[in-house]
Structures are given as C-alpha cells and as structure tokens.
Image 1 (cartoon, rainbow, N blue to C red):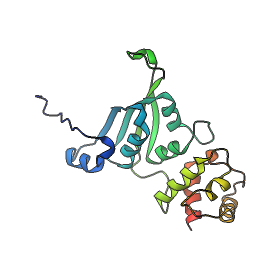
Image 2: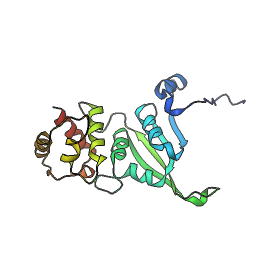
Image 3: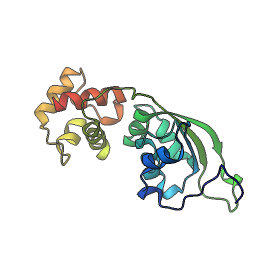
Image 4: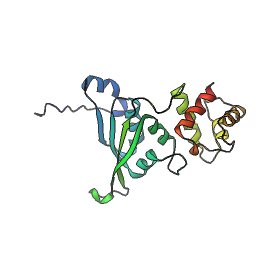
Length: 196
C-alpha cells in the first residue's frame, strides 16, 4: 500500500496470458522478469516466460543443475531438449551460484541465478517452429538411441528411417549420430529438410 509503482496480481502463472498481461501493464516500457521460481515448476514457468516473448530479459533463481542444463553446449552431458529450447529464445548466462548455506532452512540442493537475454530475432530461421521443437523433443526422448531410431519411432512426426538417413547424408552427418551432439543450427536445418 502506498507504492504507486507496485501492483500485485494474484493468479496462477501457468494459467495467465503473460503476453497480454505485460502489454496491458507495461506499455512503452522495457519489461523484465525477475523471480525465485518454485523448483518443482521451473521448466513450465520458464518455458511460458520465454514463449511469451514479452520480456527483454528473464532473471531467475533455479536449481543449480537446471541452470547448468540450460547453458550446456551441444555434446555435453547436461545438454538436452530444454537447453536447445532456451537457447532458441535467449542467450543464457549463470550470473551467481547460491550455495545451500544461504538459506534457512538449508535445502539439499544448490541454486543458481541465471539471466536469459531474449533475442530480438531467433538465432536460427526455421520453416516451422513447432515442428522443429517436435523434432528436438523426439531427438532427446530416448537418449541412448540414434537419431534415426528416435525420430522414426516418435509419435506424430511421421518420418521414415529412409527419409531421416537421406537428410542426415545431406547434412554430412553419420547415421549413428545422436541428438545430444546436434547444435541448434543443425536442429533447424534437420527440421526444415525433414519437412521439405
């Protein structure tokens, strides 16, 4: 009360139209999101914040392993579908590690503050963003499988092993390649060639 520049909006972030809310509340401003996210809903909340494309930057405290996964480059053990998703929308950077002894009561996990600076335009172009994300998810669903097997078995993709092998050959990639070795740029190319 008494702070004219503060408005508290009660609601469920996962049921809120974030883009509409931000446009209504922050016209002509440079909105940024800053939060200490509940760890059990970190992924869906962060996905919603990034997909809204409503914020110039998102700075959040998350579990340390999640922060490392978001920032992981292709080929590293932490690299996964969520890494690629986040790196499509923003440039992530871990700005601070927060050890368990910073909290009372002390949690069992370490935390990290991560900043994601949103790209004005995605770093890669793709014919169909949703299809590209479907390809990315399918590529990591069964990590031990090759990309050929993972994509051909993915429900909803409807791509044959022959088509996948042909596309990998065009990309000069081995038939035994796994999803975790592909960069965002390669995923965009893969999705466009599979779609075409």
